[in-house]
Image (tube, one colour):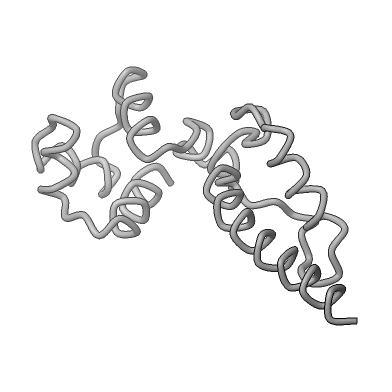
Length: 128
């Protein structure tokens, strides 16, 4: 499970085993051994890999399918971000009941959408 997670995350970032090894300060063989399941990391290495990919160690070990243990608790939300989340949570435009693992990235995208929708609504109200 660990090896597949590492390989998937590496490929999602378009990294070769050599690229990943260089970024982590490992040998390519070490990465290859992890991916093939012939070697397991020690705790510090596991944490280093989790930090690099911005995922939880539980995700890497296959204990959860969520990349972050609790993304909402990992970041401090501004009042504006809370307003954006509330808007999309109640919005008939999108189904926002299952928040993605990467809340910060998602918020950046939704803030843009939120501003566009607000501007459209204001323009529509002005025109009526």
